[in-house]
Image (cartoon, rainbow, N blue to C red; front, side, top):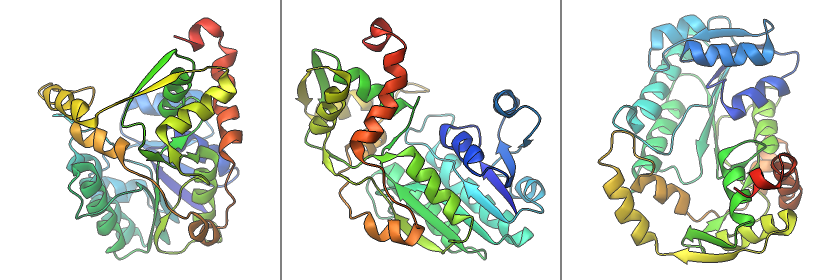
Length: 304
């Protein structure tokens, strides 16, 4: 079996390549720099190809001979140089076309919990349209929608770790519900989907607990030894600041991004777990693992 992976140089992409073990992988990336980063990790043992994800013809050439395509491409913050349409809908259309041309056995795409074509949030609506394009294609597609993903070295884990050891932890709407999922659980779901357990359709997957953002920060602090006073800021203030930031070519934050981060995640993950054939990692176990590496860097760096 040969599995093609778009976005193979990302955190989840690298994890997935390792988890697939002896399965032949074709890593698809967008630049020489991304290709070089993969070759540093996997040396010459990986088939890496540079391709424009929105170019169906090039994608078809790059995926010829593959059985499955795992699509890991997406953003929550658009800029003047990379819109949601460019990041979501155009690649989804190209992926569906390339898969159909090569008669792949299936497409597995990682999406976001809250994706919906009727959403007022531009990111959620864009991801919803991309999901629909894949589901409507000639090749069976499985869409796995997930919330915040926690793994070693990723942005969300690092941000929560830093907040957990500060004296004052500022966050927008601390009552927002989070249901973070362990990165390893996401990888297991992807591996099962390209093995014996491929089923087309949408699977909404999340972690075992839904809790407020304030409570999540405190769960991190119970492991890191911090005792932060969590201060909740009105989301409206963030939206005003984000609107001003959007005047920049590459804003640090946008209104759509804040809307995604503010989304209340509270679903029953068990149906998706049964469908995907996985068991979820406990939240505290995940937190202990993702904070361990940061704590090993030293107290000064960790508390920066």
